[in-house]
Image 1: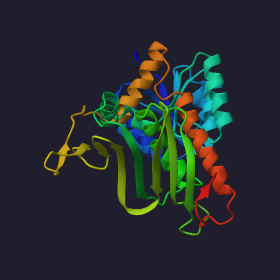
Image 2: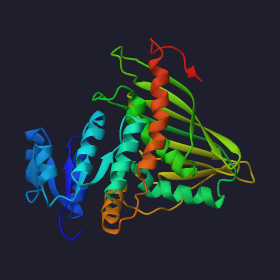
Image 3: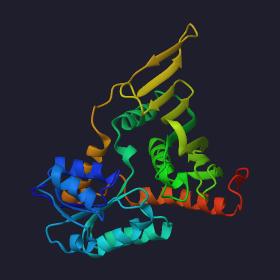
Length: 328
């Protein structure tokens, strides 16, 4: 961009990373947060960036052309709607909204006003994920048989009703992207309130990906109570199995296959060394400049929300979260 034009609303645990990346890209004009302590940190690290605790002042600022929403997820829809009505391009951290109709409304507002609307499905910009997508498309793994994503961590800052709303958007968006499937179906879901506070903190989700006349099974496993962080995707094919372990510093992507001798052979495909969030922020700025529709647009977000809304409805029908898995 020729001049700073982006405002980040919400500078907490994830918002501060967005502040850093847009500042490094020379695009950050303003940061907004209710916490003076957080704003003090930004003023120290980025003295050239203006700060405010008022969303209204951000939306009224003519220099600000685009808004990045990194507030708690239940506020994504109203904040994004305000920004679009104010004529700002909008990037919203996942999930885009908590209701599929709200996602459709945001898409309609952006389309009517010729504005960019993008959702932060970070893994679709991950170099290793995109290398894996190319390998799958080329037939390197053979015929796909099963895909599973495990995302677990210890999280005491639990603001969502369910761990699935917090973590599964990453898994569902990534798996759908890799398999080129925009009509994923939820088969079974299980959720447990392991700490007795009314929040689903351990969950699994069985999925089906209808692709070219086949129905490829998949599974998502999420947890907020695991002391050992696990961020792992496994794609099983008839020729090779790919494992993407994003918690590793190096060799995140590995291909496993049986050699002629029956011994396991492991290959480590190369992929560009770039921070996914930097690439995602850069993509948002490019979409503003060119008018192109983002890779992670409202339709991409809608598919994730459709699945999660269905899952939430199923879980809510059970008075005891510790009950066995629900099945359609």
